[in-house]
Image (cartoon, rainbow, N blue to C red; front, top):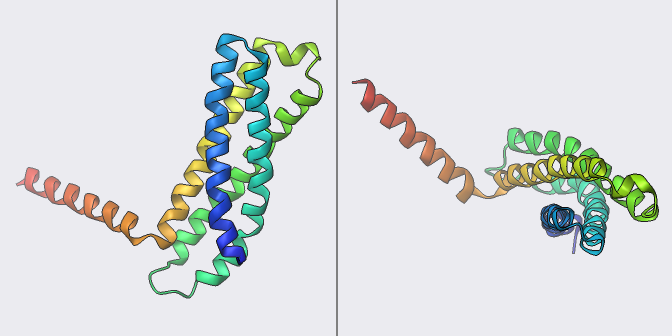
Length: 164
């Protein structure tokens, strides 16, 4: 297994851990179940820890594919820019979750304010890391980009026909 393979493998784990944790945290907060909420917090920490090797293997992954036909510098750059934002957001949500787990008996971490803050940060980080993964798919998956190009082409043709 090389670093590119590790990058591709772990990015799915980090994304899914973040998304599942959001759902679990939201559910745990609604029914006010600390065990379920703690499970979600552990999931956020896991997503944050998993995102570190994903981010660190990004550059070696880029170097291994940047000279392959069909891979564009633009798609790599967009993915890379999004990853820089995502890593900070996912690490922030993981750090807050870890702090909440360590200080779980502190009054603040059982308040509605904490639930709101954690929900907002986790939503931002989950959406960001998912979007980064989405952009990564365009780097080497022609079936994704060709489908989107086909849809854009059909939309443009429909627009021209309406204008006649």
